Length: 485
Image (cartoon, rainbow, N blue to C red):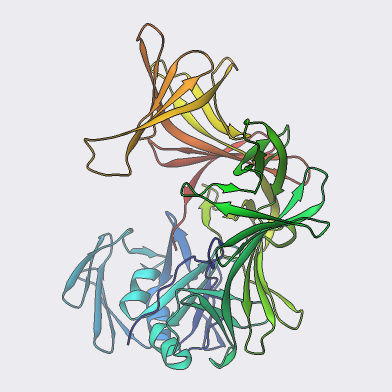
């Protein structure tokens, strides 16, 4: 039976994902980090050793979990080896070794099995998937949900590419370009057919609400007064109106925030209007009764996603973070849409902050750090002394050595009179009028998030070490590791 593909996909540009908190399949197992309670098919049991996180990996007590999955665990003390069997599958893992065996296949583990307080602890995801189960991690509640693929197949009969769990207990499955709602018993509740249109809610320069629609190949802006501006899309994917004005998506910075924005540029290059986006996104569907259903990303400028059903009921989806991190004190953090959240050990969040700035980092040969960012469709490089250089694109030159038609050297004219050449690796070569060259090497990026109290979280990613540093509103810094379930 074909396994389902679990992926963080929302329809079109929506970024939601799989929360995995509700399954209809038999063989459900639910565990929580540092909690000795395990649920098997809804029945609660107590285990003597709770799940733990070691080096960003989830480890579980072998015997309790394998038996909960309907398997058997044998321990060979002389070899320090656990032999797990379920049906025709056999898995062998050895304490301290990252080499495992699944039937006749040898696999490499991300983390080796360990013994804690006399109990053998094994990496959950590898065991679950070897036995034909899906293991899903909810970072906000520190909960692991394990569900059997084949049981889900038999009950829903849907081959879906994404799944969202609603607060109504239903699972919303993306099947092709359409959605299906399935209840906790695996029964189909409703089906939603893609209408082929979506919109981006915006505000104009006077703060009035308006919307940009992409409607089955037709693009237009619906203004607050009900008037409509039809937009044409050219070969370069630029949007233009009947007067020849271009609508260009870029970012606009203020002292406190960075916002997505469509600037309206006339044929002289002057900016004549702006439409500001808050990252909310709507996709339109029809239910079986013909009523409109809207799947919403970042509703009401909040981190959450959900669906507005045909009867007017809004169902919020349980959160699936795009990325999660853990610090050395085992505190967790999550990114969802344009938000950064501090996760509580008891579930929920203790703080939520909206993205207020982002920029790329570059370093010259002397170790001086430069920032690069966009503002009003202008690319800017900021030197360590605070001076800014505005770059104007000149031309693209194919990288003939790469063999790829998508690799270019992009030439920019700097407002300082120098030429800036961006190579396919993301590094700049800067040439002055005399031909002297300086290399600005891409070293990382920074995302800044501002909370309701104007406190700023700064998340810095270093490419060389692949490590993250979080600077908190109080000025303290923590090294973070991106987690994997």
